[in-house]
Image (cartoon, rainbow, N blue to C red):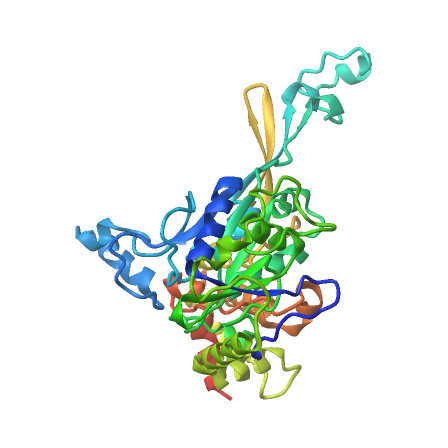
Length: 444
Ligand code: SF4
Ligand code: SF4
C-alpha cells in the first residue's frame, strides 16, 4: 500500500530536501539537546536479541513458574530499545527499532491530573454566606464548585524533541492528533514537540507497516525526516517550518525567514559546518542524490514482506455480509485467548481509551485521567448494567474492528493499526495483530 516516496511538493508544506552526513546529523542532535529536552531510542547495554512475537510471553514464563534465572531477573524489557533523555552528544543508535513503549506517553500520559479542587467547595463543609441557610443546612446536596477553588493543571512543558521516530509511530501520532484535536492537555504537549523521523530500510521483526500503509517511509507528520544512504550520507526531508528552523539552528541550511521560524532558535548561521563531511555539502539535493534516495527507498520498500493474507483479513473484516465476512465462530475462537492483561492497548500507539476518576485526599481532590482498555469487561458496561460486549470474543472483535474497519478512516485519517507489531510481542494469549490477521486471512 505504500509507494516509494517522492520529494514533498504539497502546497503549503515545507518541501525541501537536504543532503547531510552523519556528522552533520550529530551536530543537529547536539543543538537540539542544547535547546530542547532531547529523547532518542537507546539500546540497552548487551542488546543481542531481535524482537519477535511472543518474546514477552517467553520472558514471563520462568518467573511465572517461580524459576530464578538471569533471564527472568532482567524482566521485563531489558534488551529493548527505550526512549531516553539524552544530551545529544552520545552516538545515535541508527539501528534501534521503534521502542516497545512507543511515543504516545509523551503526549497522552498513562495518568494525568486534569484539575484540582478544594473539597470544601464541593459542598461537604461549606462555610459560604452566599450559599444561604437552606443549602448550608443540607450538606448532602452537592453544590457546584466555585471557580476560584479549581486549580488549572494544563501542562506547560519545555520544548522537547523526539529524535528517531519510525514511520509507524509518526503515522500513529498523526492518528492521535486527530482523536485529541480538541484536547487541551494533549495539544499543549504536542505543540512543544519537534518530531524527527527516520525511515526504515529493512523490516523490523513482526512489523507489517507496509501492509497497512504506515511505512516503511513516512508520508507526513514529521518536522524532519531522515533517510540514511550508503557512504554515511543522510537525506533530510523538511516537513515543517519548525523543522526548517531546527536545521538552521544547527547551521545545516540558511536561516529561515517568514512565519514559523522559532524566535531565538539557536546558533548563528554556519553553513560551512554542514560541509564538514567531504561527501556532504549542505543544500538542496542534486539529481544524483535524489536518484540514490529513490533507489534506496525502492529497495527498502521491495524488501519489506507484502503479505497477501493481511490484505485478505482486512477485506474480510470490512466485508458487509456473506461467507467472506469474519464469522462469529472465528471471533469466539479468538476470544478465550485474551487474558485482559491490557498489554496490547497499553503499548498500542493508536489506542486512546481512557477513564476519568475523581480522587479525594485530605482537604482537596483531583480529577485524573488514566489509560483504559476496551478489552476490560468494565470498560463498556453501561450504567443500567447492560453490556454491549459481554463476552471476551465480543470485545476482541470490537478491538479489531476499531483497528481495521474502514468505517473509522474518516475520523482517524487512516486505519487504526499502523502495523508496529507491539501487540504481538506482548500478548500472552498469542492474539496480537499479525497472528490475528494471518489467521483470518488464511481462511476463506
Ligand atoms: S489481546 Fe492479549 S495483550 Fe491484549 S489484553 Fe488480551 S491477552 Fe492482553
Ligand atoms: S494493533 Fe498492534 S500492530 Fe496495530 S498499531 Fe496497535 S500495537 Fe501496533
